[in-house]
Image (cartoon, rainbow, N blue to C red; front, top):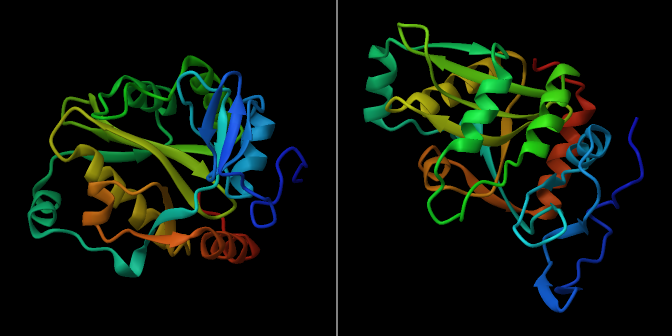
Length: 230
């Protein structure tokens, strides 16, 4: 059952700037600052199209961006080079075999231009609890020696997978894990996933940006289908 901690992102009046202490912060994508990171709040947020993203020096911001990146599976474009790698790969892939390790490796991964990770120890505790409750999910990529060499994790927002982060220790491992996930989701009736923000990798696969209203309408329509994607 949905709670009332967060406002409806469609009717919420987004301020351009918010004063926090002695500073002003741009807030046109943020619906709340400092709301506690709890499993219950995270669950409600994602079901409403909102996600938390740690920002150094700020009370935790909860975002619903004006522009949202999504990947519609009918628009998926797999580069020839990646398709060739996919056909020849010796990696194997699993779902929800080692969520804890996948998220921790994502937290350790270097992110150029991001000034470190937003995945704090608190995030790991809360999202691992959400995984135990069946709300957060992971994809693992394993090499022939049984070592975890890539993967990704995210949230099931009522039939829509919301991608959170990826990591790789072998070339293309995270990309192939994503393609494995898409095949899985398609088999379960899903037609798209939420990328949250655009990245060069997702854009190369055919992701595009839509506005907030279109995203939230898509989310609500998909939730009505009551898909069981995991």
